Image: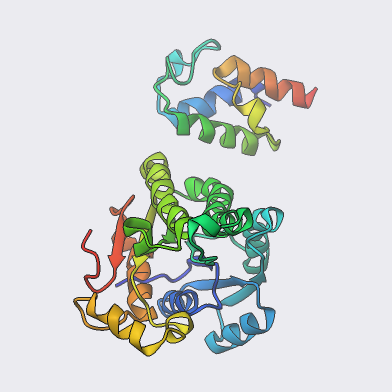
Length: 78
Length: 246
């Protein structure tokens, strides 16, 4: 089973159509990866589907980079 | 043209003249229509008139919890999420501003404007995911021109236009269009009740020389709902026989 970090990165690469090497844990979706604000909403939707969880809006607003997403998902699984 | 097979359309205020004409037209082009309204018996009659590919969901749009539950209820009944949202329901509480009560204002804003916001917010997620969606709201000529005694109604109907433009800009890149149809004077039970002299006077102000029909409105809605109108978004189609050329 691929770990959370790899799965999150895969979604980001697929959704934003960016090069895998650019998707580091600290890469900001908007500032570094060229996402618009609706892309960030869609990323959260994709994370919800992939990990079968619900990410409430107040938590979603704080997910600004790959690490934020991984941390949130792990906190739910933990 | 305008084939809506496999599309699911939710129409609020579907028991009214314009609402049902919209439902009928979408249904004729193949859509499964969900009729929503507050008169259960009329809803059932209207559904029976359409035959198959039709569902009904009772909803009081003045109740925000009920509004938030409507898209889910529609989806549960049909078995798939709504593709086409028609914000048609509307009420009037006409009164000169100087005598207008808070509740006249609040109810008109709640049903004519806020319900559309809530329904759109609920449905936009699945539309974005599908990369296809249509949100069409029924405004009014009064939203553009104003009308004495209708400060609340005019504010709500103008609000619908601004709301639609903002949302249209947000979701245009995802294949979701958001548009408005603004009727002028349409022959319905409401205008039938006007005194003869007043009607005559009104007709003088309409270059087309007649009141509009509910089908005149439904035809514009049908176009905006279609695949063919995919490049039209943030627009308002004025259907008023030339009464106001905007």
